[in-house]
Image (cartoon, rainbow, N blue to C red; front, side, top):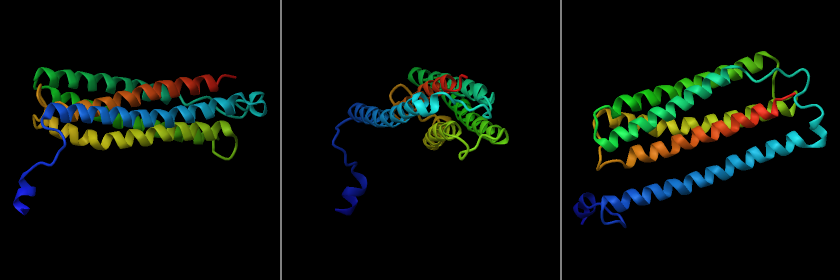
Length: 204
C-alpha cells in the first residue's frame, strides 16, 4: 500500500491538459484576490489625497518630488514583462532560447528591486519620511507593498528559470512558465497604475 501511494499521482484530473487548465484558473482567482488588495489600497490613497484636510497641502511644500529612479525602475519592469512574454512564446514554439529569455527576465526583476531601493534611499535623504506627512507615508506604503509582491514573484521565477535552462518547457509543457508569466504581467500592470497614481498625487 505504501508503494502504491508513492508511485501513484493523486489528482482529481485525468490528464495534463485538465491540470493545466485548473492551474491557470487557480492563478486567475489568486490574481483577482490581489487585485482587490491593490485596488483597495489605491482607492484609500485617492480618498486621502482628495480629502479637504489634505487637498490644500498635498504635497506639502517641504516634500521633494518623486525620485527620478522610479522612471528607470518602471522601464526595467516593462522590459522584464516583454522578455517574459518572449520566453513564453519561445516555449510554445519549442525554441531553445527559453532559458536565456527567462534569465533576462529574472535579472530585470532584480534590477527593478534595486532601483526601487535606490528610490527609497533618495526619498529618505531628501527628508521624505513616514512621520512628517501622509504624503510620504502613502508613497512608501504603496511602493513597498508592490515590491513585496515582486519579491514573492521572484522566488518561483528562480525555479522557473532553472527549469527553463534545463529545457523543461516546450509546446506540451507550458504550465510553470505560463503561470509565472501571468503573475509577472499582473505585477507590471499594477505598477503602471500605481506609478501613474503617484504621479497624479504628486502634482503641486
